[in-house]
Length: 193
Image (cartoon, rainbow, N blue to C red; front, side, top):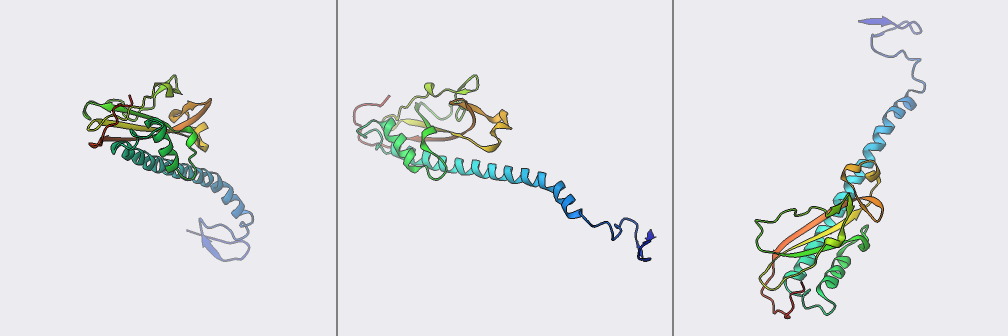
């Protein structure tokens, strides 16, 4: 179906805009698209930051696990916990400050009966780092190392479902876990537990 354009006298399709109605159309279309475009950009940046934090924490946890596995941490003069904390801090790069990292290490009897692996220890929604233990184990023992990092982000205030309170502010906890068997290194005599 076509209509006759009253200004120019030509025929135009029924759904086409008359040629005089183009002023301000770009501004109107941009105003309709700008909000969702901005929201999508923020979500993409947020997800990128989360993936970055997870990868950096995974790398730091694997490096620390290797130090425990070969016995370097158990033989450290300042104690295994301080050595591993320093090892993780030197491995963290870029946007992740070391101040918020919490570590937990425990000796396990077997991998099949592990429960609550990777769960964030909370009390009424508040991160409870007091319950974290650090035991690097002896040669041949199975060890579970877990690192917790509180990632502050833009959308944390808008997504309270995935948040935990750390130092009075809501954050998303990034968790990295490494399970391994200690190698047969020469024992220093103390288990570190």
